Amino acid sequence: MMSSYHDSVLLKESIDALAVKEDGVYVDVTFGGGGHSKEILKRLGKNGKLFGFDQDPDALDNIIKDDRFTLIPENFRYITRFLRFNGVRKVDGVLADLGVSSHQFDEAERGFSIRFDADLDMRMNQKSKKSAKKIINEYSEEKLAEIFFLYGELRNSRKLARTIVHERSSNLIATSFQLKEVLRAYLPKNREHKILAQIFQAIRIEVNEELDVLKEFLQQIPNLLNDEGRLSVISYHSLEDRLVKRFIRTGLFEGEPEKDVFGNSNEPLKKVGKLIIPSQEEIKINNRARSAKLRIATLK
Image (cartoon, rainbow, N blue to C red; front, top):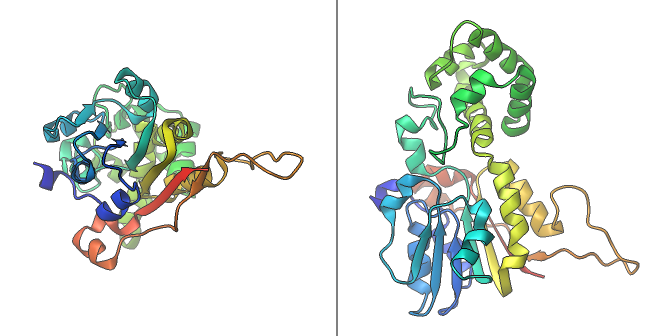
């Protein structure tokens, strides 16, 4: 199951970034197929501990039978709460491999992929009441335009929203291919795939509150890490990467940190090394890696 579920991107680099201590406590907040977790466990000694987070029930099929490992079936926005529930207040490293897993894209019925005709779903947490179908058929024109502009970076966001609202007034838009047909006029042959990917990305981010989740997660990291603890984050699009980069640099998501009378500011983290991207060899083997960016940080 695990090998077909998801090929771990930047596997060695992201785990090297954690500088794993044999008796350390680590968290993989995007467990998925377990590839990164297995690599961390290889480097842990018998007294080390690893916690995995994943809200997708499919990930439970990949659970690792190891006394040092605990899988928490929750969204990683609640990292502090559920680690405390498990008796942990500080950790030596946190890994996040953001975005959608290959498995979620390849499961047609999940509605993540533009390749399949499936119900407009896109929920990573199947218990959530907010699906892509609900957003497309119930959000106001203004709200839809805002999502397409902010999360899909689409300049014609207003036209897309207007077209959807006009169409849904007479027909429910229920599947991915129906949505594609509704927006056909905005999908020139040479750019169809790219524009559809941006549209689907925007809807998916809204369904799963991905940017809010990322912000809440990052804000908890400074209080979770031990001295010399590491944060290792892989992102796949500019919206995520911008938030990660900015938080590591300033401890904020907008504006600049305040300075004291001596000109010193109080950013909680500092970056470790430079931005890491996959090699051409890795991209050839795993196309999903092409847009990946790895950023590493530690406490200041």
